[in-house]
Image (cartoon, rainbow, N blue to C red):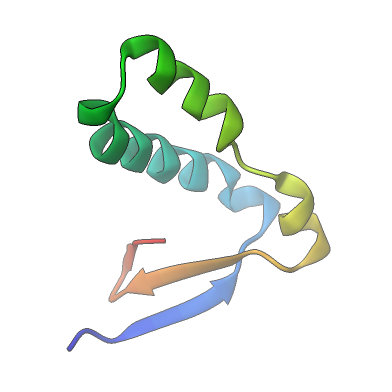
Length: 68
């Protein structure tokens, strides 16, 4: 069993969060969607930075790796 920890995201984390989101969307949905559908999914699943500003967006880490 892996140990996970969380912390609140900050505005400084936005580039890292977007990078992980892009990787997940591409790797998980890419094989299932057309290129047009994949591009549209980036728009519909974009990061809502207001959640970060509100202090309600958490980042999950496994060891030192950001995983969700």
